[in-house]
Length: 188
Image 1 (tube, helix red, strand yellow):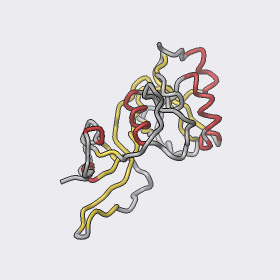
Image 2 (cartoon, helix red, strand yellow):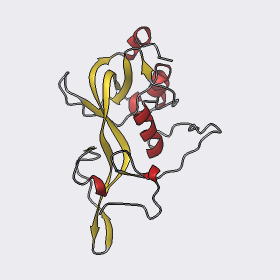
Image 3 (cartoon, rainbow, N blue to C red):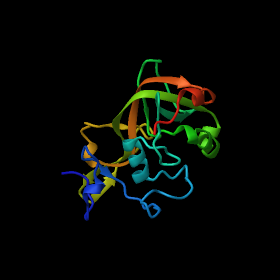
């Protein structure tokens, strides 16, 4: 038994069987997301696609650079780590062209930021809501430790409604965004 939609389609599940939250989005004639980012309202489908395909969270273009992928985090986020330990993030990468707009448009990043240039990343898990089946139906479980990510392979993943994909950054360096332009040309 696991959490499911009554009218579930294959698009509702990720590659590891996790169920994804549904949310509408505006697409242009080419099928690309349109509209101005609404930073506090993360669209699960767009976030998932951007993370899976390593696309820019602002322009949805390729976020690959000659030295890896650029990921931004708020300076106030708990980044308790040693310099050689992996970092987990639900923030999709940004391309070099959209680093500045992301910093200017996102209220969270305007307060301060950390930029990572990651040579290696992998899909790690998800953020979302946990449910349980009770005698009266489905019931959401209390949030444990805020929006703590759940790794793939977690025994409760079948009762989890995913809303954000989490990547683990390895082989990265913390960089100053002003230093990125000469070293991180976008790959075509």
